[in-house]
Image (cartoon, rainbow, N blue to C red):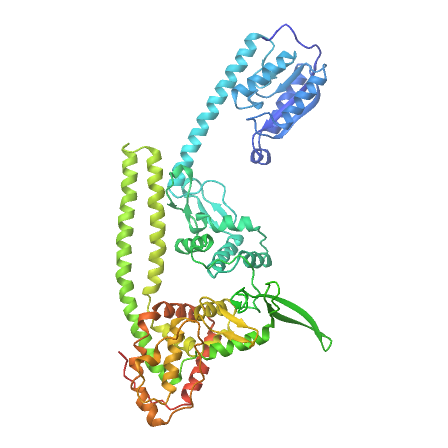
Length: 590
């Protein structure tokens, strides 16, 4: 119970000013006008100001450091009889918090005066008026908040992002006309998405961004890569889980954004956390034949002729295993292994016709699958619309709506990603057939001239389970070769044999665990070569059943290779091709 008869004597007072946010403080808020109002009142009523408190932005939901400092000061200085504020709600917009502060001051015998209206807490009536003023201020604050929140939600549903723009964007326009556009930082972020689609690690992306003037942490980069906002989509709690097309300039297409999420989640098997040295592409792809451990790599600097050179090595980290091989030797031996898979130039015509036929058949199947996916997408979009209607009619509660929206939106995202993938497969494949031929005919040259990404693709393509290094023979053991390349090697070897008519057994796959290589026989005579050429369509007919996936990977490897790298392979292919007699008929194989 407050004893209103207790009042500190004297005319010494302090001034309290406050605004809620930093934006108000820095953009013409009322701090100065609050101070001037208090000073004018003190001068007019003969009060002596001995100190100023506040003067900055501070949230008033709970007592902050500035108001606690003021309370501590008046408790220690019994000469302070009055606190001047422009309005009572400068203590807090929360009425109970401000009323508690007024009561605490009045119990100390300190009178709080609102200089704007001349109200004070000297009497019971004055305290009641102060409490009513604070209650009306809180009501006004809640009303304005409700209006702002409602308007904000409506703008968001119209696709206008009226909140603070994330990193990489700036806003123009107002209300529903607000647009978010990419700035220079946003254009770098767009590059980061493309680099991630190329299977670059986060470390590599961060280094590239830093070199271009954008410094991010790994956590911040991950936040950016998982934010649908950068794909032009708005996700907000006010939308109930619905993804809305925003008035936003996208840094990446939504389909590519979903691909990035697949990579980050690890479902594609493409995401690699550790950084790999470009000059040592066989790291962890080659295994030790003695203990089965993946070989790691390191670089050692040595002086040669007074010049420092970097020498790469591959080693096995198993205790007791002393496998430590120069990278130069392992790369030369690996090129020699790949050279054995190079396509025989004399069957290039048949191989090209076969690939074209396979691409056409695959395109027809892709067309039908694309139609089915579009039908499912239409059904999902109709279900989303029906769910919104049911919520508007009050047939379902909000929690059921949010759960259903989340499930349908997830289904729609999956279909969007699949549609994008099948759309790419539907594109005309005839223009990549020469690149596929060039890649398959001289894959060793492509590996030698390619960058780290291409080398890793070829390694995983030819040896999907890795390849073993036997230190006893200082060479590779090829036990896990892709069936496609096994069969292509068998066809080339069979063609070079002296048999008149190769049998079906000649091209069967060898038993698991045995070497798949043998040196080719010397070139046969033209007469025998002509006889064997007639059987090539029969041999190549074995390919489609087991090579569709490999052909698709070859196409992707060819599409990512540079023009210079493809040109090297093509020139090598045609130089070998033109050096031999082209005796194969020009008709298409069946």
